[in-house]
Image (cartoon, rainbow, N blue to C red):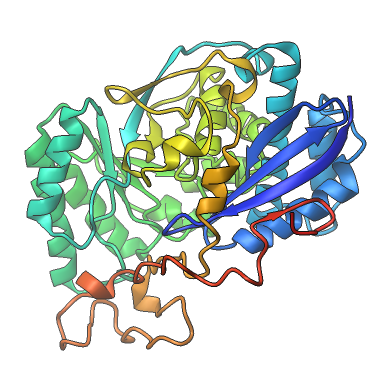
Length: 432
């Protein structure tokens, strides 16, 4: 059995286009993968074609380790989020093919199942522009659905050292959510790498007092020494790693960044094998992992197979119940949490999944599917006005934070122009 053809599909998804891949073999068997990366869908789709043409066509789909090494080490400029995401799209699909060919779930090929059920934490459940009252009401509803953990960013759009009023507003949101869900539901606050070391340290103490369980990406991801300088008040964990793109960076991250929880993204590190190796390195330091996974259902299916075969794991991130309603129809056997947990599928491959092409084509690529997560830096679209230069200052005058309608990009139009980007391309780049 040899790899004969690779397709990519770009699927419009509101805040972020999905990048899906389907790898075909010469026997008629195919597997699904996903290479979604924030706001670089066309770039990753192009890289999938290059990687497939150079390294994968004609190879056995069972040669996963060799092919991953070739795609990583044979490129002069190695890794990074774009190439790694392309690699992951192919690698996920290879595991799907291997499992289907053997009639086994992928977790049996990754060492065997050690977890039959995956406790999830909810993300994407709240509106960052709605205010503390609305966030508290939404949090109650999510906790009542069975989730034992909730994550949110109450500081959306802010910069490194925001106005104290903006920080207090965010902490009011945290306090309201904690009061709404009680002491037994874990709370995770995502900083999205937005703060300076000083502001992050100040917030760390406040978050610890508010009984937040972990503070995620308190500072920018590039400087591990700076991360290690952020205060560690008693009771608050530091969680990082979603923008660490290689296992070769992990020893330095652990030594200098001093995290308590490591969060590799199986797409952006290059696949399930690389994420598994990162998990093992973390385990040597007695640290748990929580895989970053905010993307489409194929990514979720793949991550659940990896989670099932990994010993040092904690709650798994889940957007599934708060995503577009058509998510469930995009693939067969779409994994969805029940009562705040996922049952790990034992169907072959990544859980017996197949692509519903009709749904994929009904949601074409959206050119404006982006978000200004750091709105203080200005718009993601050159045609729009820049945000004001001061952290926390808004057009309404001094002392007002970037909030409300100014925090995020307007929704993408339903009929965004896709003429320049084929939604489905084969390995030679021809639209089909």
